[in-house]
Image 1 (cartoon, one colour):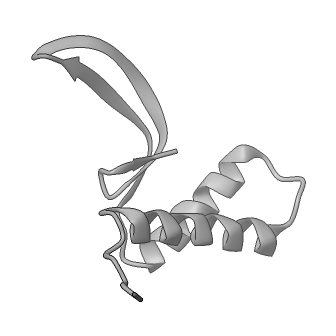
Image 2: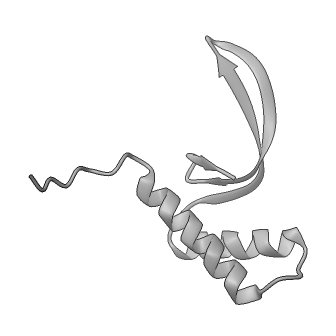
Length: 82
């Protein structure tokens, strides 16, 4: 039986983010500072109509309590953290 199942929510978003990262890196090539690649990735993601925030502070909650915090290198559409 050939059955096509719906991809898990966020799967396409991950594919878009990975594609944008690959495009930016292959266009620029090696040797730049991390901040250059980050800026290129943000530019590519925004061209795709996605929301991209760099160095975003995230508070982690568990059972209603704050259990930690970290800074996301890059947050895409409030769902994917790099």
